[in-house]
Image (tube, rainbow, N blue to C red):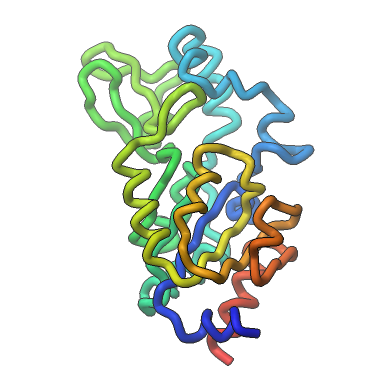
Length: 235
């Protein structure tokens, strides 16, 4: 297959991923039957809810969104290995869990920010995830300002610098691997239009709007399908 031949010879692979890349690490996705939105409405993760119902926001956020003991799965580790081998340009992720970096990936564009980073909304002081978890209820800065996660909540815009980094990677890529995303969350999903190459490998258990555009569609799951692609490179 021509796509697998390109996979073997190009050093301009780009990975674009979503919540399905982390489910095998024990982090639930958002929209499946057992996902996060089966427990609460989207508005609970909005900036309005954070500032008007801070206690309720943090009760939900800490109990449902944070998985400090989650570890990268085989799919994350393969992407890190490809970057070390100069096969992979980088990773664009919609996830906020930081698992790509924990696996060793260096060039990671986090479209929606990261729970690993937090800051005081009054003075800007930065805090770690451990700092957030060490405080019961609403976390506060030493200046008395509320600490908030450095994530894009509903009602907030994506960072322009982050968008430009993602577009630059998409415009350089020869082969795009899309994994673990149903491509229904905008504006992130709309960024695929900036990919100018011909070959897309789609890894997702459910169908997506890009299946017909893809030259190869895999349905077994992120870790298993990434292991299959890695084997094609080695054979």
